[in-house]
Length: 71
Image 1 (cartoon, helix red, strand yellow):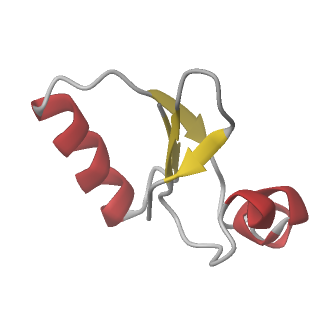
Image 2: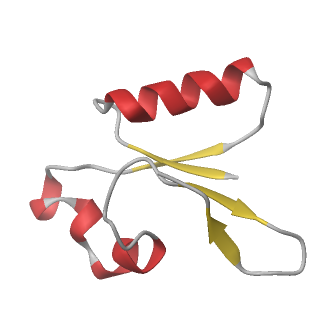
């Protein structure tokens, strides 16, 4: 499971806390909302999360492609 995270975003913080409290292992993928005009606006990120919002949580199912289950 991957959590796309911006360190100053309150929603990202809440998602990290919830995952930690539930004991759900996850990888954090850092994003920066200010560099290069905002990494969440890049085409690569928009392909993952069409809304361009942070934090999406992406879960990988065995034998299938990644599925976005957030923000």
